[in-house]
Length: 499
Image: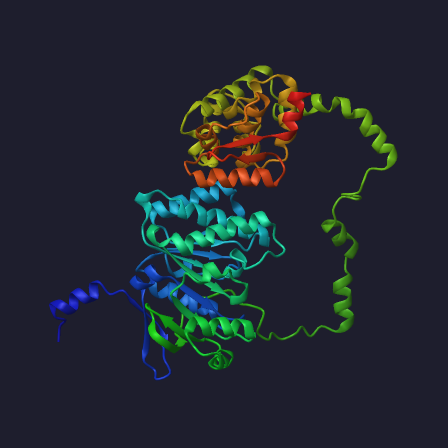
């Protein structure tokens, strides 16, 4: 018997997925349209099946809604094997490129996995914060609905300061709070998953209206989970007894009262972990000893740093360094130019600088990806017969100097600014040089429009984060004024100017 007209319309607007089954074998559904409006918190100890649950949810809803996955362990990259997800390797991009990618993800409604396993913990947190911040700051015309899944959310929204710097914790917590508290109006539906509820910032967890609680053992985590599920404290023991792959679900998108769920199967594979038993090698002890010690000295030399790295100079070397200090300004002034122009005659060097200046004169240039600017630079150099001696990093730094006009200053100012510039990352060098040039001229109130252009952004939030970053690494001092303005000082250049 065929479907009636009403049934056909219902099928076309179906917004539910089956996440698993309850204790009676009945299917348990999640209303994805409701989930987009009310967000989801997933909790479970390591080994509880939390990643399996997220994979099931992502697979079942892949054809319904755009998906953005923040993946610190590389667990979800295999989604791209079966679904049109794009894997973005966070370790392969600068902060500016990560933010540009996030803006394009929103514009083109691409489903992506941001893989962060190639970074250390603090870099993972900063990379995810920049990406989430750019998703949040996208133009209004790109506010399409999207699921934003953040695994190991306690890393990105910690309840208390840990081993990471306070600056990193602050920008990450801001990004996560924006996602969970203000993201709904922008179409962003946060799904946060954590091993420890007690380690997750309460203002992030509190914004979720749907919960899937897996096995946990610590009393503090069980108590918080029971509170969120509306259970009495004595019932919290049930959470400790949950089997792997079983969760308690509650919320407007799942059920009006707690329901036990056995999560269904998944199709995409995850990376095999080290929790299962694997047969040990059967080599005799003598062979294993020989294998461990073979060419040990050579292997140690391959991984060791330079001899004496990081040690203080001996007294004789210190005296020589003091004798060389009067030459420091001159060396700093000429070092970069000498390195970049090696093997080039004056005519070639002049032509290369002309190309850089022409690119910098384009008002749209700072807003373009660095890779595209570098391609334009190489193409212009080939057309003029100029042999390119710059790699991507040095191009970005030379472009920053060309964009801000620092090379037009007198020699002492150029030398002082170059010394400071060595401590600045490529992606924030241009705005710093603009601040430094203003400091040399005695200007303490930065032109925020010019600063935004140098940084390639139109977001006031990104400018604030930029100034916070430069202040935290000790290059500038920001003074907020009661009238709402701000002044920016570069202490080392201020000392030179007033000397």
